[in-house]
Length: 479
Image 1 (tube, helix red, strand yellow):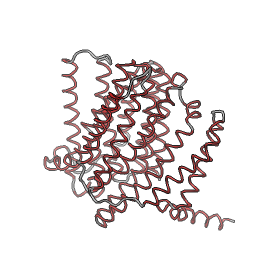
Image 2 (spheres, rainbow, N blue to C red):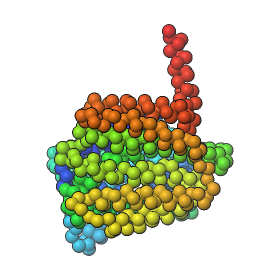
Image 3 (cartoon, rainbow, N blue to C red):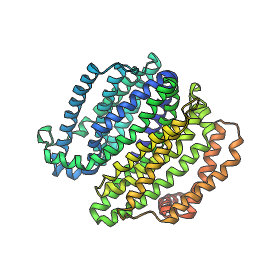
Image 4 (cartoon, rainbow, N blue to C red):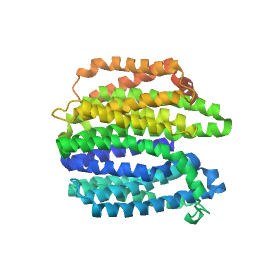
């Protein structure tokens, strides 16, 4: 529960920080911020993300004591990769022609890759050892520092560069708060082993390559929006995507941080079939959470926009997010429902194929769809690219003979979401605002949860009753 609470706090803080930065920077400067940050994320994914993935899959409390070479290898890899990024990035800035983004923001993008990579790797180590207290402390420290430094940098300087610098300081400061917990006795860079590195890279490389390809889609979209419509439109486009993907990934990650580790434990303790059973159950749970969440965002968009979106972004925000939502839902299923089918079996090469489909489809749609006065065609192209990737990945997964979720559970999630949509439709004409939003969330949540319990989607009814029974027993005893 501490991990889930930390994820919830992290989600709220990330939303607040993103909105503050957008408000204080304005569309044009936020466009520069978003493009630089997207470059950093792609570099981080390619250079550092394999360490996070390896820690999640191969590191644990037992491994910490019995196989210190794994941690030693990962630590040495981080230091060596950071040095390589500094050298290669410095040479690039020296010899490359000038870019519209500017050398300073490109340098900060490189720093973002290294520092964000360190943060993700460090938190993955804590999660793998189920050190909930230390993990929660790191996330809390990051959020407090980010509110002060990232939001403060945007407010005081109205500069994308200062906002990114504040973000880097908050990430590094948060890691320092857990330095004692992150130390492993007997693990030092001198204990790194090339054979261990090859094993870790062999597992992670396909996932990293796939994620890089996926990340290149929004990066290319932002670059095209900048080229066709300017940085101000890039800011409008990026805020919708940034907040949308954060919402989807926050919900998916909050589930995945528990569900995938449970599947790994089932695989190790009870064999491959039990692992597949848990993965199938996880798919249902992920879909049952993400589907109504996306539908709810769409239905409550007017109130969301009126309440939280900065005035400079209202209108384009809702328009772009509506176009992107089906693709964001598809990305959530890819990352948290279908990818684990391959990860649990350590057969991750098909992930590259699906990501390649996303890149090719995105390019084709971007070229085929007619451009208008805004970036709607590029938002739609990005959405369709992710949907195409999901379809391809499901086909690839079918060839591995996995256990799929029960049909009744998936249809149950669709039916419950449909009931929620029907219940909320009469409320669409209400004046957008806090009361309307609370009413929509309350009615939608009540209808969906009631339908989910009635249909017993993924066995959630039994789980809910088992959780509620002790609480009811204590209440009766108190009376």
